[in-house]
Amino acid sequence: MLLYRLIKPYSTLGVKTFFRKIYFHNDHYIPKDKPVLITCNHPTAFLDPVIMACMLKDPIHFMVRGDVFKKPFFRRILQSLNMIPIFRFKEGYSNIKNNYVSMDYVSDLLSENQHVVIFAEGLCLQEKRLKPIQKGAARMAFSAIEKHGELDIHIVPASVNYTFKTQVRDVVKYDFVKPIRVADYLELYRDNANKAVKEITEEIERRMRQLIVHIDEKDDREVVDQVQELISNNINAPQFPIKDRDIVPLRYDRLVANTVNDMHEVAKNNLKSSATDYFVKLSKYGVTDYGVLHAERSNVFARLNIFLGFLPNLIGMVLGRPFWMYGKKVAKKKSKDIEYFSSLWFGVCFFSFLLFYIFWILAAIIVQKLFFTLFVVMIPYFCFFHISYQDYLHRIRQARTASSIPPAERQLLIEERARIIKMVIPS
Image (cartoon, rainbow, N blue to C red):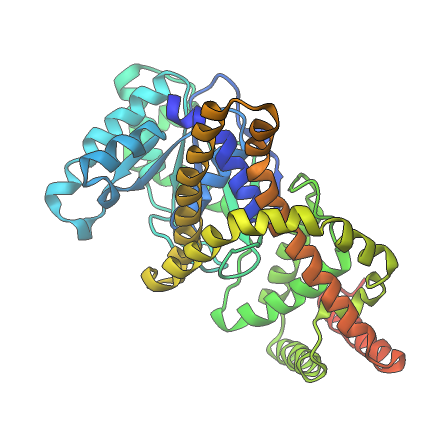
């Protein structure tokens, strides 16, 4: 727990650097001073629980695939970061037996009113779709009650929704919903344990389905992403604060996905054709949708901001860019699946920079000069500024490129994108 608390401020700055925007909604549904199981989907291998741990005030424990606990050194570190191993069948029956130890540990945590996160789908898959919910959460809840008496356990369904597939400088949206009180199912459990577990599991799935951006057909993913991009550029949310509680963007994401799911095939094909034609035109002009819609952002004020931010950006680039690029290189080389790419990038960048920063801290302790110490304190913020500055610069470049298109042609593109949005959201 001590390492968890020590590393949390640094990791919070890390995820706020790695992600452009983190929407965090309705976490008030997580009860205080109650035993809580948070059930969530799992699009990435490592980042989902890290972001949640950084954004929530109270500490959480979370279930992690057991094979990463094999080496004693890493096992001790992971356990001190509140991680609990859970083993899968493909890792061997001998390891499956270790799950009983983990389940027993979760029971003890719940008896102490701790919060435990379970990735309820039972697998990590980068899709905008809710997979079948496993029975583990319900079983853990009843197991804790059998061991410690009638604990007032609450199961809080949650969702994490990423905008893009790689999740680097992405927008991520978390949401929580009203908890399920396990005590309401105790009488049923005493009469028919299997039925009680089944009913809670079905209720978890029903509530998570309301939260997640769910696309029924894989072939519809591209058009949903395209329309969501158009709407996101319409909203044009400010970069700060990075942690944001505005629910509107996520509601639009769900609305787009649900509308496409319910579309008649003819209407859906028309939407796909229109969206494809629009993005082909953007490619032909060498512009982006953001640039077309916000060409006016390339102005004197933007150039002034770029000038004023150049020096801190340069400092951050020199100090942090090598670690950012090293993380990307390792992720490209080592990650076979998209679910692991961003997690590896973040993890390698995070820990390599941490070692580098510890060196600077030790230097500050030895030198004992106020100016040098202040500089060392500011190093992570210079690196954060560099990444944010690059985002800002990229958007201004998009606007500048789009502003070179003849106004009449840009207006036609704006009208075309409006028609596409209207096909999904009529009013």
